[in-house]
Length: 108
Image 1 (tube, rainbow, N blue to C red):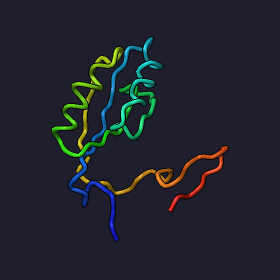
Image 2 (image 1 turned 120 degrees about the vertical axis):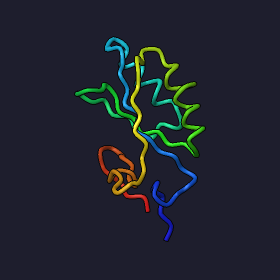
Image 3 (image 1 turned 90 degrees about the vertical axis):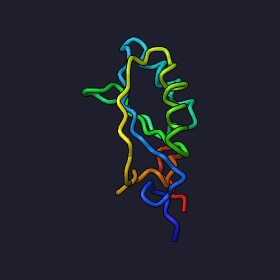
């Protein structure tokens, strides 16, 4: 059985990028982030950060390029704090589902 988590997939580099945003630009930042292929998840949060994103690339060097040349170039992003995923223990339940008219449909 093949798994797709970061503990066994060595062709995948994954990190949480916590983003501080100019409050007047939050909607534009979220829109710009959602257009980046390497960003798999985006959460608007209340707390220390404004946005938490999950970024996946094939390696550390690609991640560095995405962070420096794409994410940090988005107007309205003030700074980021990155946490590298060492091992995935549990993924969001919605990962294998799509939402069709508010009904979750499981995709095997």
